[in-house]
Length: 252
Image (spheres, rainbow, N blue to C red):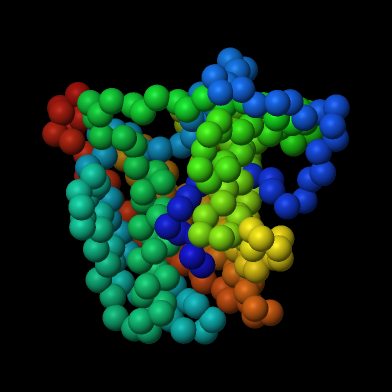
């Protein structure tokens, strides 16, 4: 379950053959349609309100028959602000810290007042009405490509450390304000040099808490396949609380 450190987008790497008639040549400046698709996907991606300053809760989990429970708290935008209070198997605790930490980082909005990074140039290299056009980030050192369909990022492909991975999002939870939380997705890893499949994880969310207007999973499951073995991590969350900035409370 190494995937927690990267995260959330999608791609299509190993499987699709590209028909010559459908492949376009990338340009250094990218093209407006690709930029518009990427901007729309960024706009519809679910994050918590910028007014959220911290999130906390309780968890109980089972990993291959070993149980652990405890609490967590994360002060957002603070180095070292994420803490877990639990005892048990060291391997499970590491997986939990990676997983919950990644969940929080991917739902955290940019710091209020922070200047948004410029969108890198992109170009559409494969047209695909069924799965969404394949969009390449021009000059990206990780050879990143992604697919956007119906305004949502549904696939990300990337190369890291001698491996290539593809994230395929298969289900979304729509928030009250019309944004989308990826609720089921797979991550598949291949050796970049040989194309050999080495690992796969399937992530799913079972229900959501709505607290202070924010979404947080009720339960999650991660099924990992590696070296012919399967491992399952199941987590349940409760007592979820969001701390809001004082000005947010005053506006209410």
